Image 1 (spheres, rainbow, N blue to C red):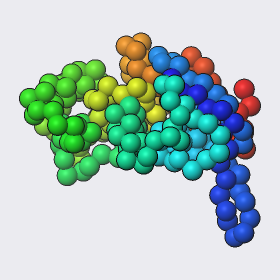
Image 2 (image 1 turned 180 degrees about the horizontal axis):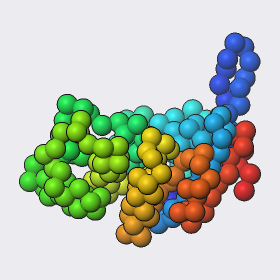
Image 3 (image 1 turned 60 degrees about the vertical axis):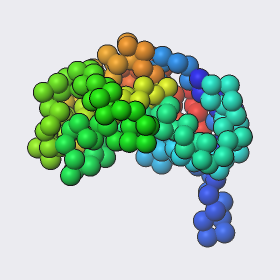
Image 4 (image 1 turned 90 degrees about the vertical axis):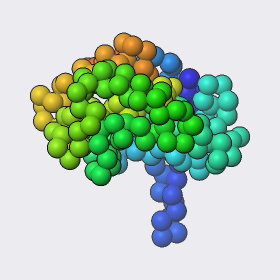
Length: 220
């Protein structure tokens, strides 16, 4: 599904070139649960931005489902990103003025589907993340674990090709972290492809495969 060939990424800072990624080669197949492990500054965030079609300024070749990403316009990439990628962040990224259902339906706002179908999809996602009775609840009243479950529900409502989870348990206690990781594992068993980005080595026990990043290079 995802194929990176000799991907490098550099920034120009004060007339000096800072290389963030160096000749990265990797493949991620549909249905995998892949962990990208590395310390702060290893290039994890840069790599996930690239994989998630948020950054197109790089050297090398990125193929998504057999097509070169560099051949798409920014508008086309935006459509591909909205359709194919679900993002989950450490800080949940929920809209505080909306209730649970409204937050989950945000990715559907420009899809053109009916309200009836949107509500049906929302209920199905709430069932998958264990929040069936929270549809009308204000997100301000939710615990950290519940907020992350809402974020996960929002990420899967469009049935994306893959989910990028960026330090998804970083703001959670150990018990809640385990619950969230168990949820990811159950979603993966349903066929959801998950890319977990973390510096916490203990989380990689949930993954089928682990990619180690060090100073912008894939080590194994």
